[in-house]
Length: 197
Image (cartoon, rainbow, N blue to C red):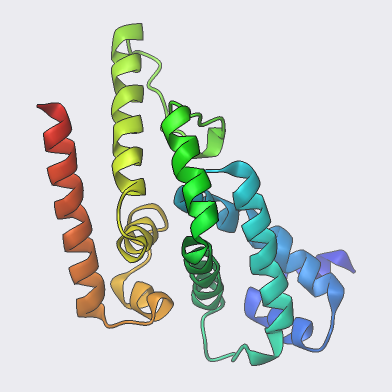
């Protein structure tokens, strides 16, 4: 019976979830939880916080399942919920300040293997260290972007979403997405070039 669930599309599972089917919900959460965790982790850079927020995303999937329309692509709907959870997180100023203080005290304490850049096996120790330092600098620069620019950049660069889907997720126009990405890349370019001096 479990195999019947795994063969269903996410859209079909959502229709069952809307009818109160908990096994469909469990199957859907298992299917998408790592993807959602990675997206949130890139935004908040805390494993514990990313786990908490990912749980909140799936609670909202269950709570708002009856509002899901089959005409909407499920991944777009899920990204929209995730982005809204991330935006709510940013608006929580005390948590933002805790993250900021933590970032000042920890030298990029990233122990999540899924979020690290792959290291080429033929790199010398010096080159590997230089690459790790560059990765740290880039992530720090991305973290400093305004939240909407950061979300657009993460959805485009890491999730590979087309502009139209990003526009739907962020509830804005395609030109607005293009503008967000241009500003984000311009800001990153300036920050990174000033750090190299």
